Image (cartoon, rainbow, N blue to C red; front, side, top):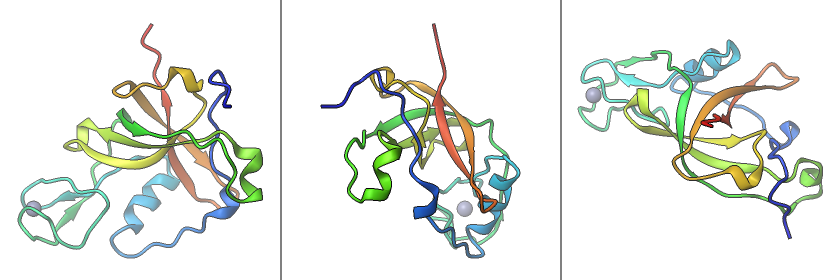
Length: 149
Ligand code: ZN
């Protein structure tokens, strides 16, 4: 049974190796500088996440990478409280989530909610980006709950 007052952690960094391509590299370069960006069509201004070669609206390959506020809304989440491999045991519980980014046309980012009491998680609650700086120089955008009381 999970103690719902526990604070959410981040998954272990050593289990994740970042690889990029021409479509994802700008996102991770900005993240390393603690800037949250999202791909926006250079022709019709439609945001898309994850980055893709073609705009789903107009098929253009023109891309811009505007910086976002880092504010989001918790769209969906789950609580991982059981280690499916031993290396995860010290990193539980953690909270994989979908965060909607209102200033990027409502696209959703797959991320983790960190530093949050599990019983405070609620669909629709405001969240703010925080950066998980890994030893290999990669910074992962995670989100924390924004207190509204
Ligand atoms: Zn477009």
